[in-house]
Image (cartoon, rainbow, N blue to C red; front, side, top):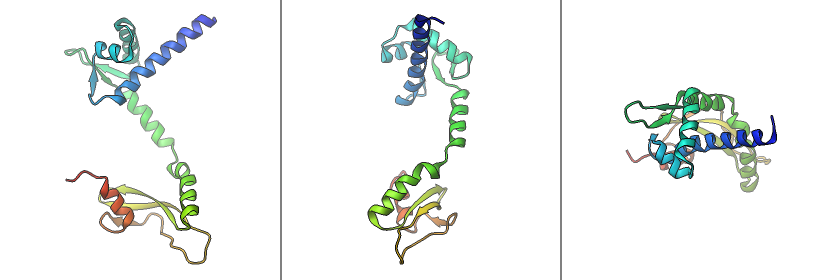
Length: 157
């Protein structure tokens, strides 16, 4: 593959990822070729070729009646694969350590599960008197400051 071919391939991949990323930046579930072309400042022909390729691989789906495109099942498969492989505890641990060191208090990571909160990790300060939690323990969302932080960001209803 020559250098020009490599550049074209990279440009094509960039355009495809730009199209997919556009779906994350708009409030609508579906987009038309003209909207995508306008937003990304690409020709409609280029956008149509990208969408056709993405549709053939399941990354977008076309509505036959409206001729608009929406994300396809392969996007979900990628998202699930990413979520299955991410270790949230390892990702958050440096921030928990920093928070515990800065405050000289216990820093915890909780996840919301329905109307409960579950402790999944913690970092305790290096001192004699400290609070620690039982990982996996559930608490109702009306009890404790961590629970109230979850409630503060839930819809009013």
